[in-house]
Image (tube, rainbow, N blue to C red; front, top):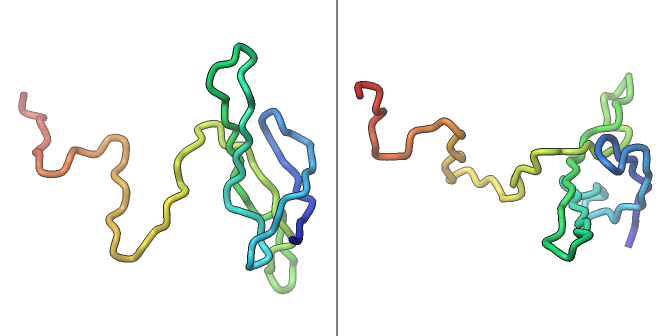
Length: 104
């Protein structure tokens, strides 16, 4: 399998460069999850990093490479988005089928 040295920015991995396996398309995965074991034997903490373009070439606008930025919220974001699927509701959205209770 082919790998690429990819830099990490932010969080505990700031400044480190790790070899990341590339997929079929030649790109690293969109999210990179690093499980960190808890010192007391509890459930591990998972660090989430999101792939972003490292830079763009001036003339063609192509991506020069990729880097990972720390995502402290660690949102799900890993499910496929099909054209026939409904978008995920926002955090302040009203549950479907129930009117807003603004009258009291």
